Length: 145
Image (cartoon, rainbow, N blue to C red; front, side):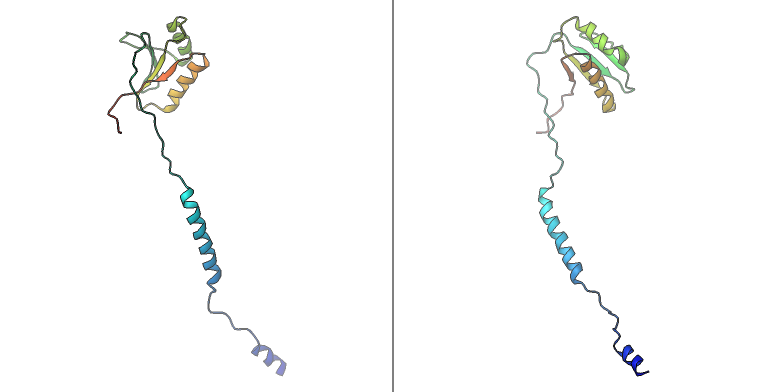
């Protein structure tokens, strides 16, 4: 029995404390990583182009209007009433309106609430048809700068 008593006497005591050194080391490494990477992160600032006025307005302009319901209408020079046109027939109607003059500009104007996707689809259809001068109509407002 004396052997058993010596065994129980040499038994380790449980630790009541948590070793904080590894925790502090990890936190310091994370702090250094964040301090080094923070200046490298750039904010998402977008510089939008400003709109100026053209010196001379083109004499013949074809306007494609994208309405709130994403319905397309085509408006020629002095026409007050835009004529509805389906997306599939848009390129053919614009080419007819250009009457062989590839330099005639085509301007797409859309309602503010129209999805961007509808405007891009319209531009894509026109550019795939080989129409060269396709642009977007903008509203001139007070400048911020």
